Amino acid sequence: MEKSLVSIITPSFNCERFIAKTILSVQNQSYLNWEMIIVDDCSSDQTVSIIKEIAKQDNRIQLFQLDANSGTGIARNFALAKARGKYIAFLDADDLWNPLKLELQIDFLKKNNLPFTFSFYECINEAGESLNRRIESPRNLSYRQLFFCNYIGNLTGIYDVNYFGKIAISSFRKRQDWIHWLTILKKIKTAQPVPESLALYRIRENSISASKYELLKHNFAVYKSFHGFNTILSILCMVGFLFTQLVIKPRYVKT
Image 1 (tube, rainbow, N blue to C red):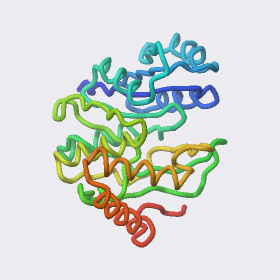
Image 2: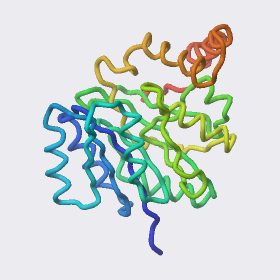
Image 3: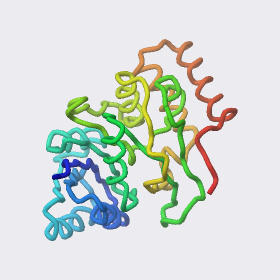
Image 4: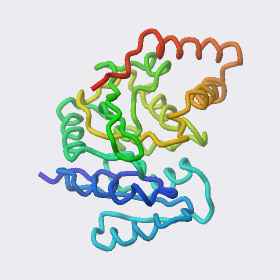
């Protein structure tokens, strides 16, 4: 039986140090029927030339270049418009996948008749060294739980286009992934992960993930601007978010 095509959405910007390994982690997938759509957001380093050289040897890799630096949301939506797959998956240009990632997730979707799934993942630093931290989630993740904590790593989510259609990426420059998963769970109510670590998330210096202040600021913006809450309600939501992070602590597992 022919396997369904998976479209992998990858925005890139000045990631010459990482992009080759990211692409290689896709090429090493046991699941072979995929297309990787890379949209470069006006890189000024060697990112584009590296991608072009690799793409010459593998026609499953497509490179597009934006005319002006526009942010990851625009790049992802550009890639989404080009996607032909039954399934949409996401992988940023500095992250990595386990070789069995696609196979296990697609099999999980089909066996459980699900339109969406994700997985656990590990954190690494810029050098690719383990930070001994695995990000997990509840086995039956509800919209309410996701509302107060983004359990879903962008590099792990996969959804069925036949069920959802192509879901446009938010115009927000930050926290687009959280908004994306909230949009999905608002429709299906709950989501089940593949309860294994199937990807490596790279935490880079000066990234939002590395800055607690920036993370809180952008999370507040999601409550206030995306959800449309007033300032007081947004602050109350942030209290719930902080309670989840500091008291319940459901996400981080030391490995």
